[in-house]
Amino acid sequence: MVKGKTLELWEDGYLPEEIQGKPLKKLVRIGSRHSPEEAVELVFYLKCAGDVVEVASRLARDETTGGWVGRGHPTALFKKSMADLDRVYVYGKDEGIIVMRTPVSNMSGQDPLYQMMMLAVGGPVLEFVYYSAVAFLDFRLPGKLRKKFPGPAFGLEGVRKLVGSERPWPILGTIVKPCAGLTAREVAQKCYLAARGGCQFIKDDEKMLGPDYCEARKKIRLVAQALRKAYEETGNRCLYAPHLVARADRLLDTARRYLEWGATALMLNVILGHNVEVLKILRECREITVPLYAHSGGRSGLSTGPRRIDDTVWVKLVRLCGGDFFQHGVFGVEDVHVASRKENLLNHLVRVMREKVPGIRDTIPVAAGGLNLDRLELNLFRHCEKQYGYGVALLAGSHLLNDPDGPENGARRFSALIQNIIKRKAGAGRRPE
Image (tube, rainbow, N blue to C red):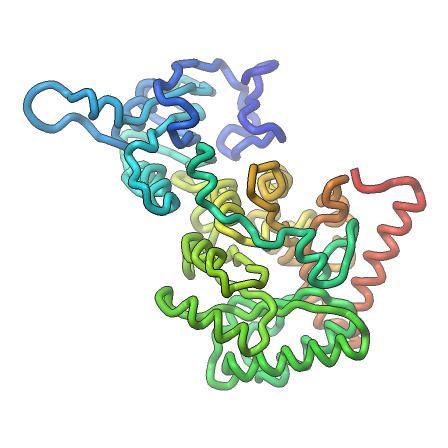
């Protein structure tokens, strides 16, 4: 696990922000008494005033059983139920990356997602004051728990089939703008023109919440009619993901109505609006037979700072719970989203969405948030590899819809540039690697 004094916890060489530029001093192998097949492995960064190995051992105890309470000595069951350390990557006496295992025997036989998150961060791990900084970096599930997650229903190849595209082509799309102040007919007209120009996927902006002047039923029906018309005129298939705005207990009924009205995909926020468990419920419903766009708004508020949950965790949860699309950021953009400033992170999140996981399809990386024509080539090639081709959904919102010649021409410009870039590279002998 340690080679040339570097961290090799992630095969792609990912380095969490807390340890970037710092040398790995040593690896302390402790050896968990819990086997990987019977435990959830949790990875944390920890900074403290004392010895990081000692503090990490206390954290493992406090996050599962806590100290023994009652008379007599701790029982054998109590000891067996306590999480423990497997290894610690030491970057200094007071900081390191710790790998602990918490036994699945503490969990009931019900759905594992809620219980896994309770074991990981549902208790006081992000609140304790006997360390100064902590980050939940990653987790690994045993096979028997992983099998209880549905994963995406479509993935990249499934969505390509829906829109009539083939590898190596990316998915071109847009996001309805402005995000408020449009009537249902205005939304439908923008979608119609974008689809005529070649867009294959359109989603609502997250601020589109179904107000009276743009009521959901009317909007979805009009957009569905507009996209059918664009298909009849051009042969271009385009999916539409309206924003699923509903209370959690009404979500499935609302999703069914959206599909009846003509939605061909669905979008919902899975970080702060709802959560990934709601995404899992949607994906496991047999009546929901369309791609799911897991919106990422709010994630940087949770994944940055001295006590945080890394984006790796959110992306892995989205994929396990069934998200077909997830926006990670845009390569080459420094002035829009926090995550886009971290190229190391963007590369890693693409890998997390694609790495081989038995029984789980891939999630499509979404490049959105400042994507324009100048950044198109960079984002095509940063998502390019042999198995997936140009495996990315390129969603250009304002830069496409606000084209001087209108949304149709905006879409045509993006589509033409994508084709020229790919054909030029193919002609030069450069194909997806």
